[in-house]
Image (cartoon, rainbow, N blue to C red):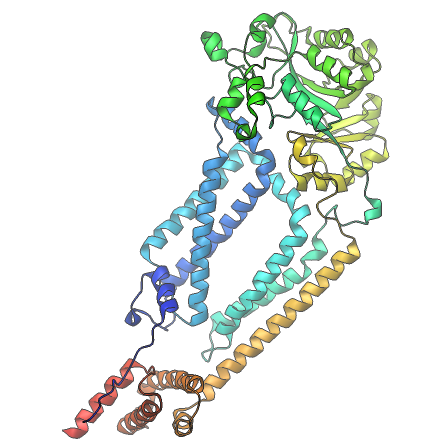
Length: 615
């Protein structure tokens, strides 16, 4: 009885099937190809890379902009008159899009490494294009709506730059495996040379980037100044409704050194605390005075303002996602909060021996106290029990009059002026946005005995950066978070950073050179292996792993032979070549019981040749 064995048995390639199936919906073996990708597919790969890189920058922007999420929501409220957390849908869409494009990028790189033809599925193409256009739209919107926030990217690079450099170096070094696999191929093309030049140039740039990285945190630890004081900006608005006694009390529990507030003058001349132009966002004015909910807050008298609730909105809107962590007692206390007057804040500060810094908003022209707003604020200060030197006066209007009336007030300014002019105006403290607080300016002002207060600082990384820059104090919406930062997040000397830099570069150079050498050796070994060597080696008993390796090399050699068969047809007898391939297959078949892989075209030709000889 003759036992017939299959001429060809395909091994399962689940990983490769999943790779080509997910990327290009090519789940069958016959759908895959090792041919070069078309220019059309290369163009889509370029679009995918652009989408990924743009989303990477977009994601980094929103990661660092976490310090100012409340400012973004407040700007949205001023435009739409509806309070909502606009960052949630943006973050969800960004995370989804970045994960999707990153996954496709990994699949595409795996195709290149394995020599598979790129063929992105049409649904993926539509989604990638939609992601790219949506991201571009988002960038244009932010540039128009929140343009100043781009400064956070430049500032954050001072803190994250050294670590981003090491991460980028590791990624580009790992890409050397893909680049080497393309460069050392038999076929030479202009694209290979261009790819190699771009890759080497990118490596050189990354090797030299630390020469241009400047961070205040790269300094000797002995030169680190004292920990910056923390000022409760509108109290502790993440823990309690802003500008309420409860909020300021929560801030005092976090050991703040001063309290900051925004002051408006009521219709009857009472200074009270309110950030917005209207009362609609932070009170229940829409319930008690619905017809006047869009009126300016200064056109309400103090009795009307005092009747409003200043805490119910906090429980309803949960602007900082912190209500769920409040105790039942705090929730009840929040619901009973009312609008706070400047006199109440000053009494609380005097009782706890804390300073007060406030900005004063001038009422509209139709307001009866339009010209008396500064006098009303000064009267509130003089009538309170607080010491004048504990009050930091910010408004620039009538500053000489204010200094003459209350000489001991600490004069502050939110305008960045030359040191000589600051001294002339008697200003001892500058309150600046963090985007204006450059390290060299801070050192200059500090050397002239002008203190710097920076706002808003809500994240530990920004607090650490300001600390290393030498600021004296920061205004924060999150004093409970900064309280947990006893030291800068990181600080290292220039020598330590130089050692890390040189070591990283040397390791990268060694790995890249090793990758290119290995890929060259691997490719040359496959090219030097021919069918005759495999036939002779098959007679000797070898482990199955060695036999499989030889068969893989045979497959590669046969592929090259068939690709050049047309050119060699004039000088080489085709029947002789077919007989040689069939003999090679028969030898391998007898050694491995049919558990091997061979090019399907070769099997068909062998079968056809046998049938021809029989005829």
